[in-house]
Length: 451
Ligand SMILES: Cc1cc2nc3c(=O)[nH]c(=O)nc-3n(C[C@H](O)[C@H](O)[C@H](O)COP(=O)(O)OP(=O)(O)OC[C@H]3O[C@@H](n4cnc5c(N)ncnc54)[C@H](O)[C@@H]3O)c2cc1C
Image (cartoon, rainbow, N blue to C red):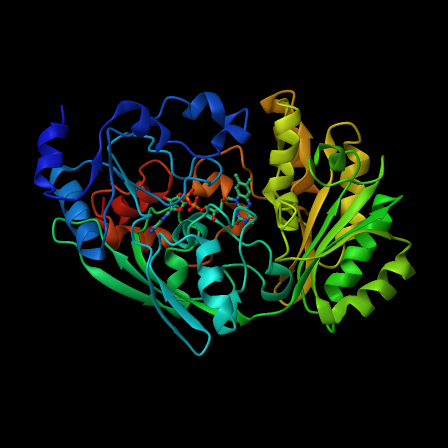
């Protein structure tokens, strides 16, 4: 039995949380989106939460966990999906939100501690002419460390691709989980080792990311009578190289009926977009050619009427709006190949007309515009979900399955090419970091030891 009181005492003045309700609250994320994961993760709690204030504190906590051989799960805002930040084997949850300083902003390169919220980063850097290249729809609550540890892309990915694309995340300072932790700096391709690794390969204490020049963004919504027309419009907008844009989303009826605070015509299919003000004439022309009717046009930073920013109806917020009204739905994450994206979107809709409500995020992948699907699914059974997934995969649509909590089973096309198990072997020799999330790790360790 671990003596957690002594464990906390040995941490000196590093703040800890031991109150059961709060420890339980900080052991959760948004895994409950999945009716399959919910019963598996509902009762997985940490024993203690530790809140470091500096990299030196992180080193102290990592050393202590290694000495005591207790699991260590890192947490940012706790807004991830699929139980990324849920401590499967208890132990320590380390909340990083007090490491929130901006360290430098030079020539479009931002160096920042991992616990800073994305919304605060943009608030600080926009007056200086720079903004984040991309952010998840959880910009108001997510941290930059959690985004890089567990996210993949978001608003901005139509221009800059995903987090995994070279040049977006430039370097990371990472602490190992050893009795004498090392602090290493990963740069270039090596950053992939901690990108979308769920905190299994090291603890990020600083990140350097490339920024984008600030644009005068406009939130836009257009209604269509036909979803295929909305999707064709979105693809054309995505491919319109002369229009500066940050978000291009297509949402099929009846999903807009779930959108509280965004009035849309009954039965309409929607295109939601963020486009620079200087692109509005081109937007008008494109919309007219595709038969859409504009229903919202407002400066993105104008939320004086209390409205939610348009990105909070997109990405995984679309699912959240549906779940708030109907607890029986869930979702999938797909990626359509760039050469046949709209043909395959139509085929998936036709195959599951009653179960799948289509939602597409247009993004750049490998220099080409395609779409990632986050369809809302009417859930019946895990077996039926497997059938839907298998049908997608048989037809060449990639799936990152949000109903699994391991990297190998769930991360799919979001996983980066880098050899993350090899980095884990170096940074986490006792397999204490977020145990259970990298299924393949034991095999690699055994192999390396010649077993
Ligand atoms: C409504 C909703 C909408 C979403 N929309 C998007 C979206 O548009 N795009 C997208 O990519 N994701 C999206 N997500 C998933 C999630 O919100 C984002 O990935 C977000 O960036 C997570 O940030 P966080 O600070 O809450 O991270 P957490 O949930 O706290 O952590 C995420 C993962 O990163 C690891 N981690 C956290 N900090 C560190 C660190 N310092 N070092 C190493 N590992 C660390 C954690 O261990 C965990 O595995 C959405 C989720 C919800 C619920």
